[in-house]
Length: 313
Image (cartoon, rainbow, N blue to C red; front, side):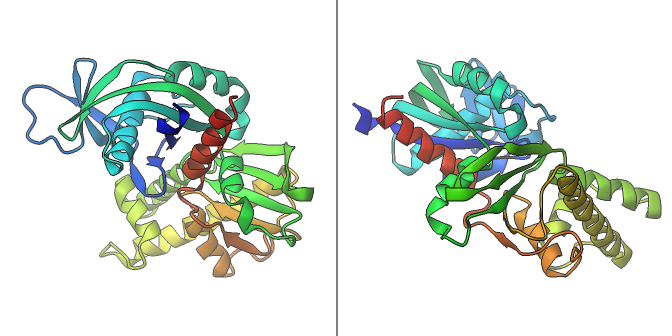
């Protein structure tokens, strides 16, 4: 029966996997042999043992592969654990970048629809059927999840989704409908910012930083370095990178100064803090961070998948 189905939205980013409103873990895994030291975040599937969250996967646009299936199974198990369930039918809501949505939609719905999935996670056994998969455009799904939060003053605004790999942007027009012709994906995600910082610190000071160190420096309020010059370089690189992303949006027809700009995604607060510091007065006007900015897409995928399934689509 439809009411027995578990609806789960998964935002399968290249940096992090997110599900629901609170599940988040690095988009990485490693295969382990022999007897594991612990079952924590250990997923057993198809004769292999995977440590979930280890060794981030390399960037790929098409995530219809076993590695991302394994990560999806981990996210499903985490969600099912919260409702004390280990068997049953699942309906998935997934997403794809706006620029790639056309050709990835059918790829994802076909690949991730699977029956008789038997696996173990955190020492518990799961038996599920992924009965139906729906795919939605990133950013737009997050906006639709928060649709009720936008009043009449939001009759025209820019939606900017700062993910790990891409910046997905779309203008929301009259009656709060996305103007699909405006939708673009730019390679101005947070991973590009991290790599720019690594390169600049190494070139200026001859110091190599790990991605995790840079990510901490971008998100924490206090410096994690003994060398104050490192933090200064990070701030300079961050300001320049965000400014470059705004200029690229201008080049693609987005009017950032005369419109409301709503930010979402894992990089939304980093970008908004730079705007609040008056670093970008000549390129962007008013900006605000969407509620649930980091989980808006996964929540949107889930809500839209449930609606589509219950309507028999």
